[in-house]
Image (cartoon, rainbow, N blue to C red; front, side, top):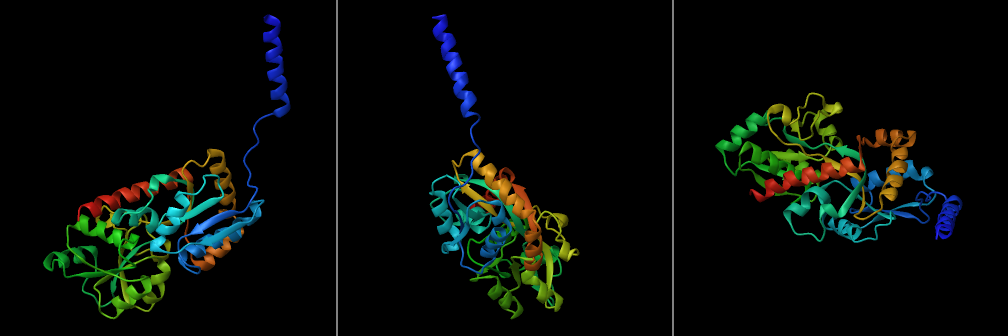
Length: 316
């Protein structure tokens, strides 16, 4: 009996010696990055910029696949049901992740994704015309209190993250504002400049830059938790006493159940791309604000933001 036990231990040790530790995961076929919007849009540009910077760190092709429709939710639904093997990722963190699911029924939950890496943050600004008598958030509150339901604001669409950001602001200020949805930020800005809106939500500094420089608009505040370096005079809502924080984030997520070693590999190699000179050069040219977070922190940020938006929507 002792001899048999000794031989079994010896056999196990021999197998362990020759097999060694389990090999780390490495992709063997193309990795698809699913984008829920059309080619040429902001999310698509972020994805293609990342791929240009990261391809050299992967042994397989990185491929962008556009699946536009329903505010990015078609793509999110597709990825939530994909095999969790590391070969199908979603560009997430914006409306499809934190906002739209709180406004209407979708076929997935934010918990069905695991964060890989956050890439950028796109700041959201509250803008009025330069000749508006609304010169601050306090002015906005006072005028809205005096004219309940009459002050109008434009966003890039019903249920968008810009819409949700204004709902959170209105809830904190305890005011009633009238929402006017548009098909994008550009037509909403045109409506503001044309005198058809009192306020508009701006989905990034690049959308405000030219109009601000021309003296056509005034930025009252931004919804981030820190000031934007390019507009240092614009305060955060938190600085003016409003407990609201919303960022339009962009990063990569994988289907729930993706093995940790796969997520780690993807994170580490995309992080190399994010730290590269290629990304630095392209991001500067495209005015993308790098906002790295680990996959775990990215997931936590999305869930926190979604929770805040959910509370505001349910309170309507």
